[in-house]
View (tube, rainbow, N blue to C red):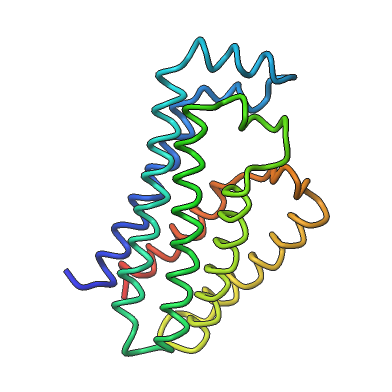
Amino acid sequence: MGYQKLAGVLMIAGFVLVILASFIGPNEVYSAPDSKTRLEIIAQNQGRWQATNLVWAAGSLVTAVGLLFLTLGLRGQQSPWLLYIAAAVFAIGSVAWAIYLYQRIGDPAGNLYTTPAAPLSLVFAWATLAGLALYGVAFLQGSYPSWLGYTLLVTMGLLVVGLVFLFDVVYASFPPQFFNLLTLIVGIIALRQ
């Protein structure tokens, strides 16, 4: 199996893990009316809270490794420096997110939208946006379909507008699974190359 196909498998696996984490729950934490209720839900579902955060972190890291393999597979076809920067920036976001999710297990009270978003959560959001946008630029220069590059660039642009104007940037309240939907599309294309 070549780098691109392995990349596709890993990105699809990362998507599956993130979606699985979303179903493990307890998802009612995110719609609870206040912090006290959120903490009670977590206390009653400690095992599910731990599992969802660990599986979500694994999905994020697997996706980052998939993008690294994609970069290795494309380095002779596209701008290698741009791909390496994209992979590094995306990996920084994924590692920050994994650390943040691990911290949520031990300190749920500090991670329930009661204070400004944890710096690691913001690093995740902005590094992932930047990494995917850089992949979009690289895809426009190489062998991947140009629509994929434009999709990543336009979507990242819209997310920046959303994060800055529509969502609360201080609390970073956006659905992070959306990033994995985009990497799923990239993974499917990688499998077909």
